[in-house]
View (spheres, rainbow, N blue to C red):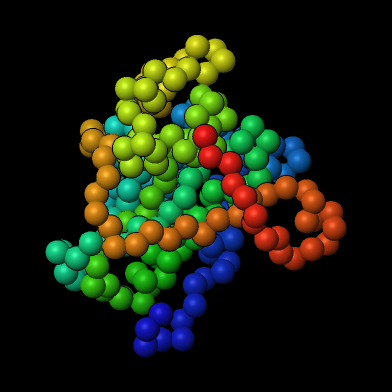
Length: 215
């Protein structure tokens, strides 16, 4: 950070990741936090509480995407976005997705601790249903926000029990009042980790991504 040698609080970041991992924890150390379930609601509520305790303004759009805003010195400047997602696969890792959200929160906390006023606003994002595990459509929240998919199509998607996205949003109270639509931004940053057993089993410290799944 400009003008300081201050780093983020690694212990606080770790503790927050572990606190989020308690929600939907599985016996093998992962998480099951399927989108728009009561477990997802608990994770969202905890995230909202942390953001509001920091003085951030939280808004939720009509597909359930969450935006936590810290104002900048110049309200005319386009915001810088940070974020990822809090939903998981049925047998997900505790860092996949959540790392990008909670690391973004730690950036916000560190800036706050240093009493830094940024020129541009900063917005921390939790996208709805990036994994696509429950309703069969990955990147749903960000896709609707970006105009790739219609909201009507997303609302009509159903899980194996016949519950629609629209009904699930209502059930957990996260069908927000704001329209899910793109807005201009200066930049978007997402710290992300994909998890699996291979690197850990082989004792490797890094993996190079060669492809991605998009549906």
